Image 1 (spheres, rainbow, N blue to C red):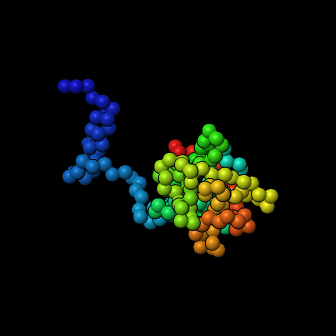
Image 2 (image 1 turned 30 degrees about the vertical axis):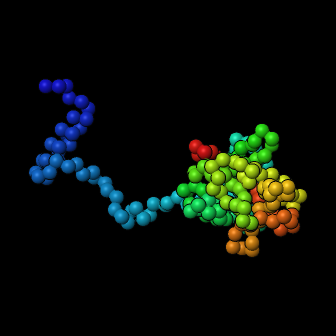
Length: 192
């Protein structure tokens, strides 16, 4: 016979104790249990909120929340589409890892899907490219009024990222007066 292990001692003691109490079962039941009413009182984690954090200049190697300065909503990838969201949950889609090309252009890769932020070629912006090619190479320009403009190349001119009204739809504009202001809030990498 083999030497009993600590687990064997616990199982043997528990089975004998429960057998003497119930006479029919060998299942240990703790003296305290949790009812569904108790579970309802446990606070669940709040959805991710775009409140908080201080904007900074994006640097290669950092991961950022890109926040629309006027609405406070984060640039998020949801269902494959770029949207602005105030509460994005904990699933991701709002963390953008910054990299820099050898010639100085910045690119932002969404850390969950691995796709890059860039122009879509149809007057808007998207995050679908797996590599930072021409439309995913961005220029970030600080503004005196706060925040930054985000620009992408369109042949020989810069196109700025903007939103229409309050619907959060992203579009490109070639006028600085229509360009939205964004801020980059450095966040933890979370493996991104």
